[in-house]
Image 1 (tube, helix red, strand yellow):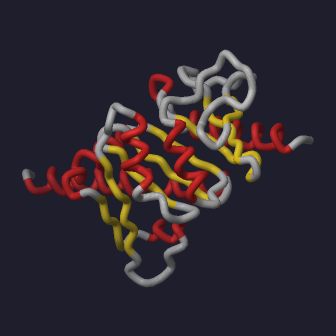
Image 2 (spheres, one colour):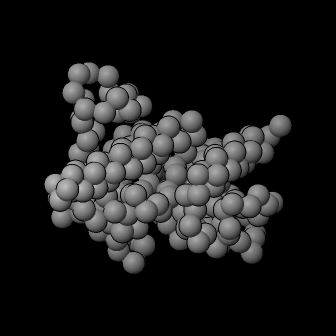
Length: 209
C-alpha cells in the first residue's frame, strides 16, 4: 500500500468519526494529513463537500503553499493556508478544523480575553499535562474573512508540534504529531467547551431558582 493511500484511509477514518459526532454542519470544517516531508505534501479536504459522505473526491494532495500537486478540478478548503502554517512551522502530522456550536459559544464568551483557560478537569491529561491543577490555555483570534490575514494571525500561535487555536465565531483548529493525537486533542477541547457551557447554564438557573 502506498503512503498516499495509507494516509488517505487514515484521514477518511477520522472524517467518518467526526461526521458521526455531527461536527460538520453545512459542509463546514476541513481536515488534513501530511503525506511527505521533502517535498512537503499533504492531503486536505476538498471545498464544498458534504463531509458526512465518503467519496473518491473527499481530499486532494497539495504542496507546501497549499496549491494542488496535480491537475484536478477540486479546490482545497478555504482555510488550507492555516494547515500550510502548521506543516511549515512544526513537525505536526495532522490538522483538524471544525465548527461546533460549543466552540463558537466559548470563542464569543472569551474572545475579548484573547484566550480561554481551563483547570481542574481530569481530561486535561489528554494534552499531556499530568501535574496537579494543570492549566490549559487556548488562544482565541479574530475571524478575518481575508484568509491570508487570518493565516498570519493564526501563525503567531503555531509554535509546537501539537496545539489548538480558536477562531472567534468560526471554529477551532487543532494539530498533533499524528491523526490519533490531533483527534484526541480535538475531543478533549470539545469536552471542555461543552462541560463549561453546561456548568454556566446550571449555575445561572440555580441563581434564579
